[in-house]
Image (cartoon, rainbow, N blue to C red; front, top):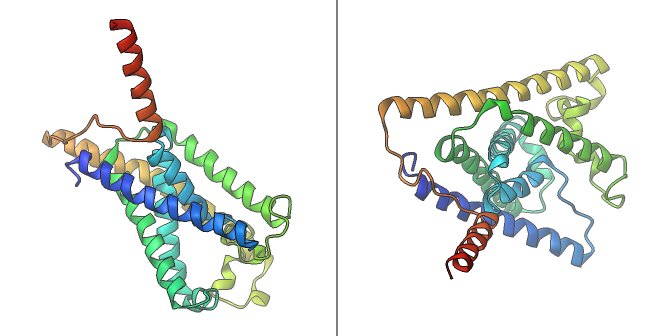
Length: 246
């Protein structure tokens, strides 16, 4: 699909719509059933970011959505590999384990598509994902401190908060052995790694598309756009043209 943007955009739109619709229905069900579960984890929020960027057609958010998707997918794989017992113990049954794997792999898939198959991004807009991730961290801290969702009862399991406080180390070693110095260096290290990944995302994307341009590769559907906002805009434009020509 890397030389067929039209097909890639359709596949990305379909996958993103399925993920967004499922997550909306899931959290609506929790509210109706009175279950205190909310979209507070990084991957939970990533589903909605991808949905807004792709399904609604917000082009400026595509790099941010791609980065969040890749981080969610890679983070899930790494954490599950380093601490498989955590995921098994936190799941009610095998169904939810399999479902979690499928959802996170689809997030990883959408991240790869946004990186390689859709657009060439400008690093001057790197502030968008930086601000976005900062807001996600702030949101997580507010949830943990009961400013938002005061009835949420799984705040001690929030991975974003564990990363910010350096307690993510508890996935690989006993919590009582983790010192403050270890926590600070872990949080700083992960923060630097995240910044490195942001830069790498733009660098790889730029080099990949420059390589295509040097080779003169024709990309089918390079000007195609999709999304609810885009379609509404096109409808308004056509109606305006009809009135002017009528």
